[in-house]
Image (cartoon, rainbow, N blue to C red; front, side, top):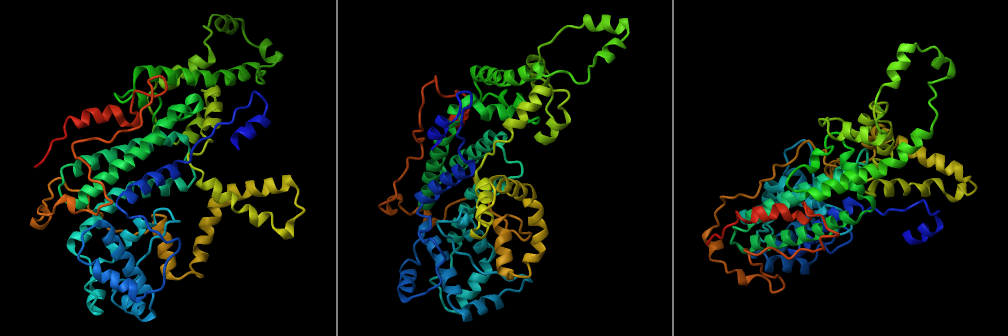
Length: 492
């Protein structure tokens, strides 16, 4: 499709395809969940409870595998929601003002597994009381199983947080991409380092899953090298809180610093040329004539500085500023006319397609069969109005929506957007956590035959590119990983 569009464009127009970062994050998360068999198989929530499901729950109740723990939580959600009587009992067991129900994850919804586990942890005490009430000890989670939930929540929370923030689409542009990749790599590498020391079988499964997730993330990260004009690097430099200092760490090779700076100058050249061709509206013949001879003499003696070089030097080599990029360039447009024009174009590139897709899904409400004769310009103006007024309308309508939705639905929506005030504390992976005697005696070979065992002293083979096409800095986190691996020891 991109090739077809490019052929229809003029030669001086180049189409650049930028992957959706939110989708990349979810692909990496799915790789993690898939390796521990934690991905849901159902496309919609299940509401029926049958004897076959009950027998399966009893048969697997004593197994400590992560997949069985998640299956137990899913079965609890189905079992409770399948009966009005059980729902009422579950409500009555809660003493809080806001009563909630367990969630069930589905494969068609982003972060649904994280939301299900977080809701389950929030309802931990209620789950135990409910299982005691109905004498379903096979559904009650042990302390070890709740520890598995803690680990999964801790490992997947950054994926949830970044996806939610990127989907808000207010200012999620490409200047965030390198920073988000770095944060995710740091989280994965730290977690891998911690789990490398663990000997329990289910923790070894999580180690393998983390390595697979990091490899998937690295595959997409390496593609940032191939983006035409290094747009990610340019947009990073155009963020006043980063500037060129972002690339001054040991993670970045000197050659790539020079390439990025040269690319910024190359992108700035056409903007400088357009500015030089534009007449100075403020300088009229009468104003020139009114200048004193002294002012003219001083003006002639001033050194002439190139617009692009002067702007780049002044901007990149100055101190960073903690200020929103668009606000900074709007304020400093007179000082950096060419750079501000470039920033206006570069920082309009969204890091994710979620907001664009959500906006254009509303086009069916405009291009309705009852409005089949709308002019193209009218449709365009309506879409632009929806785009500019979208966030204001959401805030205005939020109070009205509470009249039409139940408390459960409102609470679910808040949790999905990460704005619930009553959030649970997620326990991190512990470096000093000791395995129980039961866990120490558990043989790693007892894992499910379909789960591969990973040598904890080995690192996964990551995609390799030639030096001519791959950055020698933090590409796949290679530079940092070399130093961190020197500090990894075997624990017996």
